[in-house]
Figure 1 (cartoon, one colour):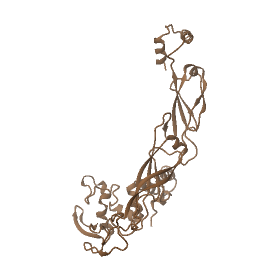
Figure 2 (cartoon, helix red, strand yellow):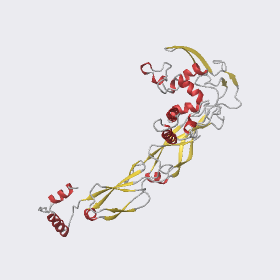
Figure 3 (cartoon, one colour):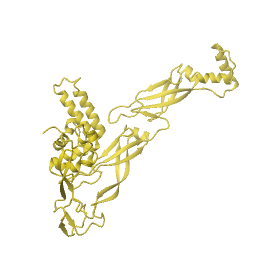
Figure 4 (cartoon, one colour):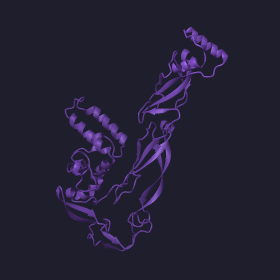
Length: 383
């Protein structure tokens, strides 16, 4: 049996997309043919690359988890996973001869051809993943926090335990499918005759009809409920990254595990700081004398104010780096840096003494001008 994709990357089955990408980068550094001395480096590198491609694609990962490694590889060889050049999703002008457009839409029709079972297969099926968003501040992303999140999600009906009917309801075999829950038909396609199995519409795959349906869920087996969950947001998380809460998605079917809840993090814009990965950028105003003679100024950070030495002769637009004063690195040690851009403020409202001093300064530099509006315009244009 070949090594499955989680084992190839050395991650758990509930690893987040970021953890998978990080594991792939580590494997790539270790086994890239250009840098590795391992005689099997090229093969290991290809396996890691393939594992990353499948596990970072939500649709392919869900199929992989449901089918298992061996059946997924077998389906992929026949183009049944919808991915890669050999799949039906890459047939160019021909499109998907089984309908459904090349993604999951055509999966139900082709399982029977390869596996002897339709898209509605017997056995446990994992519930669907649910997605939502959470907005946080830059300060929240800096410190990390635990926040309550209320979501509306499908849950197993408590009255019928997901059966869709009362426990004492009369049951009879579905006459449409003979209790199989599926109906099989043969279709002529551009690739030849294909035997297709579809869920019976009358019994919806149950194979059994019941005299009553559950009044709470109206036969669906699920109800929509609000759930309040505690979400742990790690320090250093970035805008657009996704947190995965295992088992907090839609309920599984026939004993399958629940899906997961995927939470996309949205970080609000900050009034003072601009984020660039793990680094922060900040702009501060200083006076002309401060820039000329140098000074020690106070600069805000997300962890309190710090002092920064302004060198004599600092030019407007010059950038200073404060090491380790940026964002914490996600699940790693250390912080990014804070880059402080200095903007020299041009004076616009001077008293007589200040005007005379600036005039003397201009004359000492060989500037024979009348200190007035034109001078201040010249000062502005020089920065």
